[in-house]
Image (tube, rainbow over all chains, first blue to last red; front, top):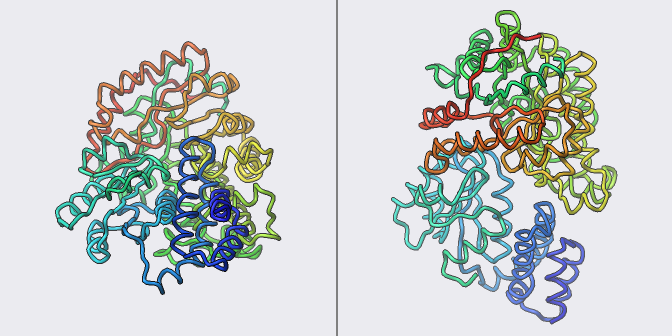
Amino acid sequence: MSHFIDLKMAVAGGKRIDTIRLTQELLAAGSQPQEIVDQSLVPGMALVGEQFRCNEIFVPEMLVAARAMKEALKLLEPLLVSAGIKPKYTVVIGTVQGDLHDIGKNLVSMMWKGANFAVVDLGTNVTPERYVAAAREHGAHIVGLSALLTTTMPAMREAVRLLKAANLPNLKVMVGGAPITQAFADEIGADGYSDDAGGAVNVALKLVGEAA
Amino acid sequence: MSRAYLLQLAATNLRMPIGADIVLHRHSDPAAILLDGPRLGEVIAETAVTFGTPLAFPLMDLRLEKAWLLTLLGVSAADVDTHHFAEDPGADAVTRLSAALAASPPPPRVAANLAALRHVVKNTPLYPVGMSIGPFSLATKLLADPIMPVYLAGSGATAAEEPEVALVERALELALTIVLHSIRLQLDVGAKAVFIAEPAANQVFFSPKQLATGTDIFERYALAPNRAIARLLESHGADLLFHCCGDITDGMLKDFCSLHPALLSLGSSRRLWEDATLVPKDIVLYGNLPSKRFYSDQLTPPDAVKVMADELEEKMRATGHPFILGTECDTLHVEGCGHIICNKLHRMLNLIPLLPTP
């Protein structure tokens, strides 16, 4: 048990070398990959999200933690895939058309991966049609739209409109980014909004009906 | 510019948005104007007259320097927006960039900006202000992940130890090279002040937790390049107008003040009346209405803008600190929302007679 906690804290602390070592030790000791994800990685990133919301850490520390988590996932994902285990929920994310900013999107993407979502990252400057196509192709449960520029707000509105019009089963739409507010999210018909990457996990979990 | 002129303007309770983009898009052919220096100069002059200010503020397009830099280093025009260096391009890249800057004219958009500035100087009584992205903010645009190398460097990693640190430091070198060149060109055509936009010099890129450990990373990466700019401007008798609309700490604010700008422009997350206690009285504070949310009347009702403006002005007057009321950043045109934004800019304004320039 303590190894799971040690790994959780190594991830949360952004200790890459320790994360790799502890993951390897847990695997060598017979722990199942999914168990490691559920007992260490997910709680580790949840802790990171909480610390960020409380202003105990900031974006750089979140990124360092996410980087450590990625190292653990590099070891675990092949094992999970070969065992036929995949995340329960799929999310598609991208920065809206006309916008090339990706820091916020990348952070949310990492936090979602840390919460054991399968993440399909479309990159930046994503047209509304591409969001719809990707959501359909991957059977997405959530599509996340990110924007930093006020000039791309119309593109976000159009993307939400198209996604809703596509009537894809169980699909929810989340929005976020510096100029976005809850009021704007409501105005354009988005199902969820988060004002930071840490909160994006909780919103996503609520949207898929999981306790957050 | 003499600092005293800005202080004098502040004493008149001047209100002015940074709004050239809004006025540009009132014209039927904004794309053509952006490539036509004299016409662009007319738009800048029109902006000043529209908003009742003697300061000719140019358009804020923070993509120009990246495109210019990468084109000179051989990246195709189609790729400049999305191109990031995967590794340190080497000291040779800086040499090549410097040589290319000396040997070739600026690209069309930059040339038009220079011609616009020249037009304002020659044909109007307005005070000509130049503009550039700041070197740190430009450097962040040259990397896919700029935050991690800054953090690593702040933790003590050196360029010799960490390729990412080597990359970000080279990016800073390249960025400073082109920004200084751009500023020199603007000074040569008559700019009396230059507005340096450093939106990335904020707590997203520099962790306050890390800064509290005593690292000098903010000085090395955010301030030192801008000190070089401040020295250049001072040597030409021009003023530094410094802008950062990102979320910053009080420590970062004080550090910006150490650049001794004539004007400090801050984002809407700051409470300027509290910042006034941290900023020397010979630095005019500018800002900081939340103009990034002016595109929607539901988000920001028009009447709320006047209330915000009046309240901010009253609070700042109570501090006695020199202040020009304005927007937190360039007020960009948003397709379909131009009239909504304009309406708010007019609500925030308290038009006064134009002052003659010194």
